[in-house]
Structures are given as structure tokens and as C-alpha cells.
Image (tube, helix red, strand yellow):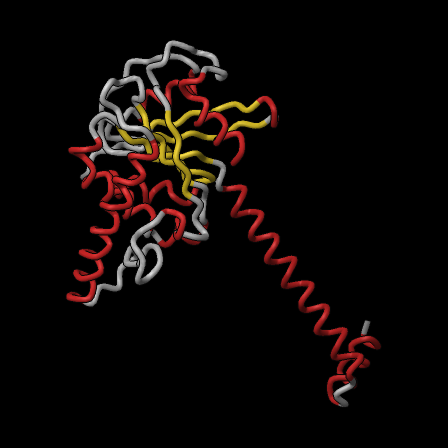
Length: 253
């Protein structure tokens, strides 16, 4: 071993291109292995599907359908519900976390669980969005501009629930409404940040400068829209009321 060390030392001292080239290759190889190891550990930690949304959007009922494959009585909670969703096709389970939607604690809950997110489902009440669009957009903006979320870039599904209601809006209409509200919110937040010189964690500009807000411009974040009815009669994972959700989860698992 000492002999090889002496050869390397002399090679470095003499600026031997062969020795230096081998050293550079070894160093690059080691750094690559370290990076892959750290990344693998990070991805292994992110095995959870987070259910987010404001109060009464139907998150907890969706959680019950995923975890228990059944209807359970739901109520407003101040702590997270956790369970597992089995994916037989991939022989694996995903942790499902239903986060409280109350405005006073949802930010704290998101901070606690965001690093576990393999995917995020943001649930919207399709029947009441018209009067709740500002609150929904503010919560969504906070989520999308979070540095941890932006760095990990988990897939995000905006799930338009309660499609069984007569006055519910479809995913395309809801997307347009949200993009308009997010565009307004982006302008007001940018102005507020400039006024106070904010350097907090959620001060990223969402989308492209000089262009109206568009969910397509949030790369590397990938945001998709889907529809569902958590109160659908079917209890099988094949039932159409939740098919958009099941398909998305199986794809990101």
C-alpha cells in the first residue's frame, strides 16, 4: 500500500497526467456513489401520499376509501390521520396521511409531513369552490411555493371532489378559476414581499415572469387535475367515482 501511495504522491508532484486522470476518475466515482446513496435514502423516506385541502373538502372520506376501502364517519380533526394503501400490482404499500384543513394548523401540519411526500393530493370541493376560491388558492400557493416541495418535486394531483353534486364544476372549469385567482394572488404577494423585503421560505415566484399564471409553468413540479366523488356507491378500487385517484397513485407509487 505504501508503494502505491508513494507512486501517487510522486505523480501529483510531477503533474503526471495519467496519475491525475486516475485520481479525478476515482474522486468523481466516489462522489457519484455518495450522491446516489443519499438520494436513495431520501427517496426511501418519501413513501407517503399526503391528502391536503381546506375544511369540508372531503379529504377524510377519501382517506377512508383508500385505507379502509369503505365509508367511515368523518369529522373535523386537529391531528393527522395515517394509514396504508395497498397496491397489489406492485406488491407494496404506501403511507397515506390526511392533514387537517383548518387554517390555523394546516401550515404546521404541512411542515411536519412535507418531507415524506412521494405524492400530494390537493382535494377541492367542486360544489363550493366559487365562494371558497380565494382560501383554496392561498393554501395552494403556499404549498407550491414551499422550498422543500419545490426541491423534492413530488407529483401533485388537484382532485375535484363531489362531482355527484348537481352544481359541481368540472376539472377544466376549476383549473381556469384557480389559475385566474393564483395570478391575482401572485401579483399581490410579490408586491407585499417587495414592500417588506421578505426573505422567508415561501417567497418563490410561481410560473413565468411576464405571463399569466399557468400550472404548466411550474416545472419541475408536475401538477395534474382529476375528478372524483368520494360518496360514490362502489366500494371496489375499480369503481369509476375514484378512478382518477387510483390511476394517479398507481402511477406515482
